[in-house]
Length: 506
Figure (cartoon, rainbow, N blue to C red):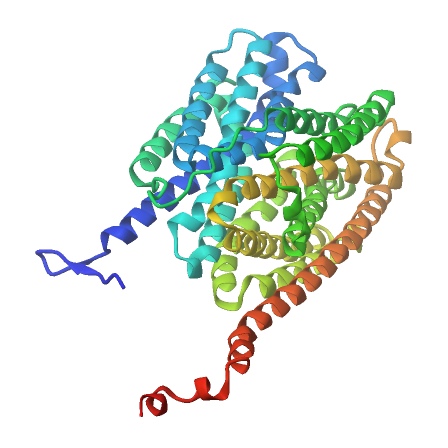
């Protein structure tokens, strides 16, 4: 066990291993912050982009969509490449690519060059998102994985919270280019820390150098792109194009599965989905992200049109959720390390379900408190679930599969966010009859839309809770078999061999 060392002044200092682990975790935290900041900061600049480039909203929205599509379609492939060629060089490459693309975004002379640079930036973000979780198991000891996951979750929430406010200040003070150029110094710092502190692949570790599945990668990317576009184009109003894209995505799933079953080195080992705990964790991540997207899509309409808050107050109230998530994630990590990931997963989903149920009772007469209290309960549950779920999955994965499984975890979350943006928005619109209002929603209509949307969210949260209970039960049975294995083996040994060693020696 490493112990603290004394310097010449008699003061204690952390051993080199702990200092290196701290720097490595700092670089992973900054990488997480950069990727989440890149998602949330760009939306603030869309009005300025419309004015500067003389473009329509349908055109400038691709500044956001290109980034999200690149992450969604490439994140699993990024994890697989890292498992093949080493996580350290791929993560360093992702940070460098993200930082370079940020420069191109800030200097782009035309809208379409900006969109192309954002797609490249999204590729860098995909590498960072896929590999930060994968690196945790190599950076900290197993009994501290929960705390590390909590820190990364907090940094993600901080990036999401900081993006709109920081972006607004930068656009107002320096113009739209500043929202991309701000990433450059942060990226350089992240790269320097990662270069110094991240561990290289162990010499004893066997690199998985099988051939890269190009066909599977292309099919998965096209399938995910079709689904993401189907759920985002038209802003929730499904038309023939959306239906066609969904059909194409469905066909792509079957083609991808067939391709994976026929190649020697598939992008994703389909047999891994037979592991109930992994499949349940991915399903829960998707469902919970769908639920949480309701707070981002529906809440602004309820606060502005239902409670009559102005834009500044809406932004302040909405920041409650991400702030609570950031603070809760740090505590959630320690609780996960102390009480176990599966117990905390169940506790988190219980809190999430309670919070969404309280939101489904939203009444305009309760004012801001009627939103802030339930959203606090919801976000505490979300932080606890996200931290414990990530810790449970990554702690049980072999070193050669950490990259692709980390990519799958992030993919399930992104697909949930995309699904939630469309599904929850559509439910709110139908329930509040928004499509039939030419001026705006009345308070009662906004409350009705809020209630129905979060009633649906509560049902989804209950489904995730059932998955968590079944997963915890399966994990308990597995642990019992492991504990009982030595006793069963001993019972099969002849009685003479079971005698105490001192008797055998005599």
